Image (cartoon, rainbow, N blue to C red; front, side, top):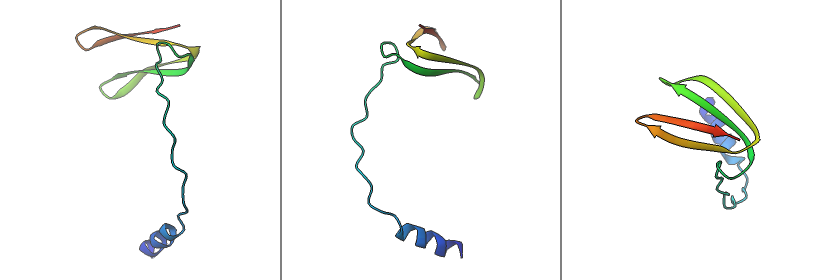
Length: 70
């Protein structure tokens, strides 16, 4: 029964528009809204939201980074 529904849904797929080129964003120079997450052992331990900001990510040592939000 489930496989028949999948086949039926596949037949209903319509033509889709081609995706235009994606604009590359440089968070160090492009002001926008950003979410910076600090992750340790696969878990998010801190989140910071920058509204109308820039984010400069700096590598400061072995496995260490800093994020400067302006």
